[in-house]
Amino acid sequence: MTGEWTTFRELLLPAIAEVPAGRRGRAVEAALRSAVREGRLAPGGRLPSSRDLAGQLGLARGTVTAAYAQLVAEGHLTARHGSGTRVAESVGHAAGPRRPAEDGPPKWRFDLRPGLPALGAFPRADWLAATRAGLAALSDEELGYPDPAGLSALRAELADYLGRVRAVAADPAEVLVTNGVAESLALTAGVLAAEGHRTIAVEDPHHEGQDELLDAHGLRAVPVPVDDEGIRVDLLSRTECRAVLVTSAHQFPLGVVLSPRRRHALVAWAAERDGYVLEDDYDAEHRYDRPALGAVQGLAPDRVIYHGSVSKVLAPALRIGWLVAPRALHPLVVRRKRLTDLGCSPLPQVALAHLLRTGGYDRHLRRTRALYRRRRDALLDALATALPSWQPVGVAAGLHVVLRLPAGTDDVALQDALAARGVHAPALSGYRIRPDLGSPSNTLFPGLVLGYASMSPDRLRAAVTEIAAAAAAC
Figure 1 (cartoon, rainbow, N blue to C red):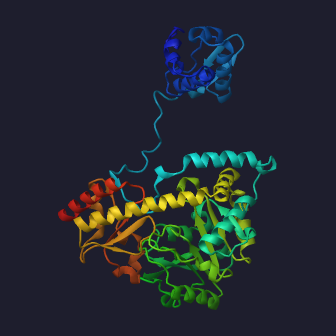
Figure 2: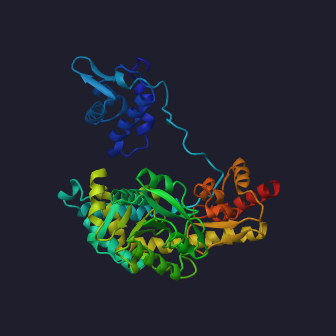
Figure 3: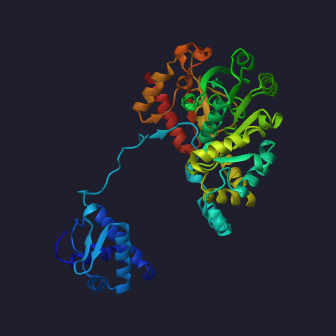
């Protein structure tokens, strides 16, 4: 930093030149903060007096005094009587602009990973309005430590929504709000392990990493194959498990729906084993050709532990999920939630409650269903033209489609070839569970699992061109 205080005018004036008069104090504060963080103001360097800087910038002295006071409170500046205001020594370790600690995930030209909604379609204005309305309605007491089970207003709205949309039998007192399905599964696994369970049956193929999550909370995953009716309950009965995790509405990744026959067989199995069905209601709201079947939970509320979230409807970043447990288990999962993190933040909960109560959530779903159907149609039309021997598998639902590749295709080699072209298109074989242990799903057909919800039709068509070129070169 030069010792000439007139340079502060050159440093700060551009930051406030186009800012309305009432906001110039914040602009000065932000410009000084950035200059300190980026090393453009050296540690220990003295700043002009508030009177001098105010004169240079044409501001009221009080405006500069308030900016200095804020940055002193943040630790960026120090102020001592007789020595003026200086840049704090403790922030001088950066020789230039700070860089992220990690490079982050790879940047793909075409990211076709499954399970990602159209993040650009997130209803920002509606969410902001819901947050404001909900915050205004919160009492002072509700800003204290929350109820570990969740905000009562949201639990009531969720019970109503799940009952009318998913046929879930739930009283608000039986709903637990969580940080997404990942936490609700972790809580459930911990409770079941404490109750004596050591294993849990899971669909094969299934969500990547799900078996690792369950194992970390005390349950060893036992793979059970899936066919075109869903999980093979006959093979499930051959295991010693007393709990099973299923994606009944839209199996991940194969995209099949658990048939009515299998649903009844599943709840009968749970009753016979004195066990539980963990139902991850994945992609339940996104059915494009007909209304979705209701949740399995409605058939046997005392045997099904129901899991859901807003990650595929709104955005994963919100980290809002829910769990509806049988009455015998509900106090146990609430206690574990309390011991884990004392409960979820009430602020996003109150915003979601407002969206549900005022119809904003349903309106968003109607918009995105139409959007995703157009994108799915564009992807399948492009594939039918460029790669007619590749066949889509599963129902018209969800945020992804599975493609059956010609017999003999190495889907991992194709995945790698696409990655070299900047296309993220996961191989179906990557979703198998421990294939080295001889799972019956080792004979699973070669395929790709393509998410389409986050890309425009034009981008999807361009991605198919790259996929066809890579396939021809393999």
